[in-house]
Image (cartoon, rainbow over all chains, first blue to last red):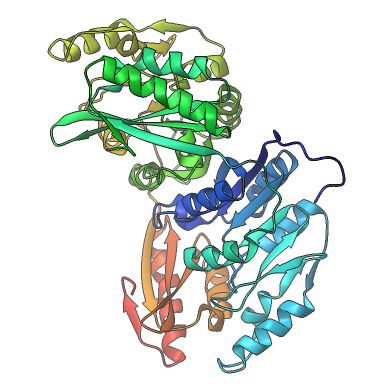
Amino acid sequence: MPDGPPDPGRIWTAALVVIGDEILSGRTHDKNIAQVASWLGVQGIRLAEVRIVPDVEDAIIEAVNALRARNDYLFTTGGIGPTHDDITVDAVARALGVDVEINPRARAILESYYATRGGLNEGRLRMARAPAGSELIENRMSGAPGLKIGNVFLMAGVPHITAGMLHALTGTLEGGLPLLSEQVGCWVAESEVADLLRTAEKNHAGCQIGSYPFFREGRVGANFVVRSTDAGALAACLSDVVAGLEAMGREVTPGGI
Amino acid sequence: MPDGPPDPGRIWTAALVVIGDEILSGRTHDKNIAQVASWLGVQGIRLAEVRIVPDVEDAIIEAVNALRARNDYLFTTGGIGPTHDDITVDAVARALGVDVEINPRARAILESYYATRGGLNEGRLRMARAPAGSELIENRMSGAPGLKIGNVFLMAGVPHITAGMLHALTGTLEGGLPLLSEQVGCWVAESEVADLLRTAEKNHAGCQIGSYPFFREGRVGANFVVRSTDAGALAACLSDVVAGLEAMGREVTPGGI
């Protein structure tokens, strides 16, 4: 928590670096971006940028250093397991200019976890390695903890393990006002309502309108999402959008189609 | 096609910039990364990096300029529709230092497409705007074309429209040898085989081994993917991995579990 007076209008941002050849090859469909984004939203933190990089140390270092400097928080997913392609800890340590050490608490957790699973070996001990000065993020699923150092949070790549780590972090990160959003749907071509949307957004400061077209059941429609940290402004902007659609003789579906 | 003698060992790379607040808010699960990655693989082009940026002109410009300079090709998805939040054309034109113009061929396509759909209006005409010097990428789904300028390819955000644009580009981009891959699965903790994998990768130049653990039916397993552009090296490396797993008394499932 900061010492100064709080700024209720401050926007807190985070970035995410997804590490793994398996995403870039198309083998694995990423599931962490959406879950990290949604979780951050609830914490009042905006996901400002995502980069997906291969299992290459220089690529990880470049992304980590670019994004940690210009965001309040930086998260990584992937590359903290026991095998040779898990190089996130080494890359982040180099990015931060600190050594890699065996974290005694992480080692104790792994010793306990593997006591009934064949014991620690060299590969498993790799998961106790951490940039010097790291704190641990609890992993209730599979023993090996995530790591926090400065504003950088290293998490697992396997989505249900990542989910557990996010749960362990819930409520521990300072954020701002959550970004609220409301959606309505309409069977209308978005190209017919471009003016309406532009005007509504311009007339309501602090609101963003997103337009998401679809083609379904043989006809075109779109969902419109209004986002703002100010509930009053959001409601007024949404009301303008709905009134404009109804003035065109269209039926508007609350919550979206 | 290049004038000089071909270099069969050359690795061709591409980057992808995904543009859209809806991905960063967690509202929409991206489907384009995996389909672009898979399509590139077939063209013999490696997806080297992905960035997801918001609907903010400066963010798009930064990503486009960083990635087009260091890759053979740069693809973007999203932000080329008719509404106010579709700013990709303007951002890319600024990144490239060229003007935005109404492309006559794109305009003709849209006039024809909308002839039976209510005609062109201001929003729809936006989709004929292009960075000066662009060529068109056919959109067989919904009229409005994608754009190619230099090594930059602007595509739709709606996945089935993107798929059609990729199809239109198939076979038109020069690439290198496709990256081959083979997968095997095994009911083994990846932490037991870290040494085996590291050694196999080291003994077979040009091969990468990925290890993808899972927890299923109450027990742990992993799939192992060997990738190489050299079929012989790949087969030899895979054979070492399989032999190593079998020497541990494990059954290996070809193709993965």
